Image (tube, rainbow, N blue to C red; front, top):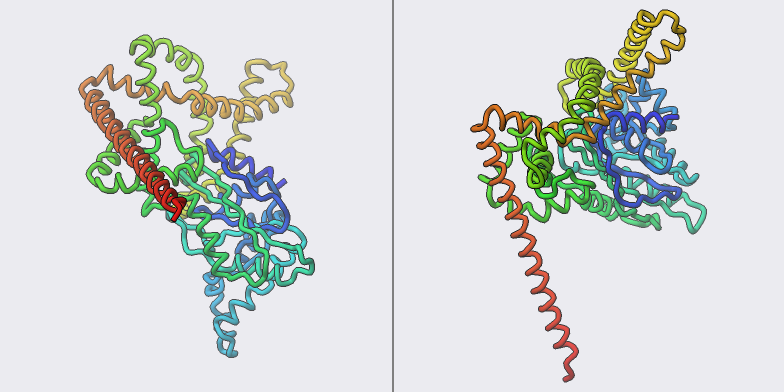
Amino acid sequence: MLRVLAFLVCRIFFRRISVSGTPYVGPSAIWASNHQSGIVDPALMLGLAPVPLRPVSKHTLFAHPVMGPLLKLAQAIPVRRNQDMMIEAMAHKQALERGVSEKEWRASANSEAFQAVADSLLKGDRILIFPEGISHDLPYLQKLKTGIARMALQAMAHAKKSDFGVVLQPVAIDYFEKDEYRSDISLHYCEPIAVTSSETSVDDLMSALETSLLDALAQFSSWDEKRNWLFLFEIAYGRVPQSAREFRMFVDAYRPEFNADPVFLARVQTMRRMLLAMNITPSQIIWGESHEKKRSFFKMILTQGLFYWLIAAPVEYLSFFVWFIPQRLAGFLADISTRDRDVVATMKIGHGLYVFLIWICLGTLAVQKMLLMIWPQLDQNLGLVIGFLSGPAILFLGLLSSERIDHFPGYWRLAKLRLFFPRGWREVIGEWRQLSEAVLGKIDKVNRQTIENEKAERIKYGNLAKRVERPA
């Protein structure tokens, strides 16, 4: 039941979820992921993982009136984090006064949690842990806590079967815009790490785990830098990244070339913000320019726009009314609840759960009243059923229309600028074409250099092989 709820939350909150890699689905495994959002990350893992997981969560959440029952339903294991233990100042102070050292205090506080995890692994359970230890709002991996490795080794030490082993399954979660409704997200299952001996070094396990996550996640100094690189990727390929690892490989390959020209990067950021203000994406411009090569501008406005204006647009506007008010209300409640951007997404989901429920109930009653006014002979219960289903149906159709037939609306926004403000359109499209050509030129330059380097390496090693094979 909880996995179904988590799956529904993920599908409602995110527009597109791309999953890549092959996960380990066997028993006795610890699933480890980066942690950029408090509730969304566990919901993603519980809802999208191909196997049931038992999360490890901070012990203070078990007393929460909403989270507590959900954690118990998920059979979560409570753990005391260092920052949580410091909050319990009196207990900590009393322990220190009794002569208990800081290290002993931490070990005693978490000994039950470590033992519970070890026992679960020995039974074949799959444990979910976020080794960064705390959710954060930074687009790069934080220092990993060693508890995950010590838990795995403790289970290995207590194993009675000689063939018992624990597997660490790293998972990379890559948000594009984590605090926005209907944004995109990428999930990548990294290469599993097998723990075959209790004598394995903790440092070796943590190094392997960190390397595996870094192989799938691109690292940035700020979210603005990450948005610039997503913009560059969309210019290069005409689409968003299909996996976290694909995006990381793109960034690593071309970052030196682009970073060598900071003035050009500033132009990229300016263009990105300009298109964002106009609500236009690079893929929509690319779509429009490619279609204009096949037909005239006005013919495309008529042919492509006919379906949009007659069918898609009315559904979208009606869906916007159904969606806009509860979305804004949930967002407003989240904004006044906290100023921490890391918590905003979590609060939006929390408030959205009951705000949308109330909105659906009010909409159901309103539709029932309207139907009874138009058709008095209609059964009231049937009116309630129709009213209850009408809101989600309109919302689904509107989202389907705006997210599947989304190229023409963006092109139409640019077309209106072309029709009514031709000078502004020429400036925008001229800068766009210069920028996109320069981006593709830099990428082509790096690709040609890479090919030349590979050829040089093959020639070098080929000559070396001939020297080795040459008889004395």
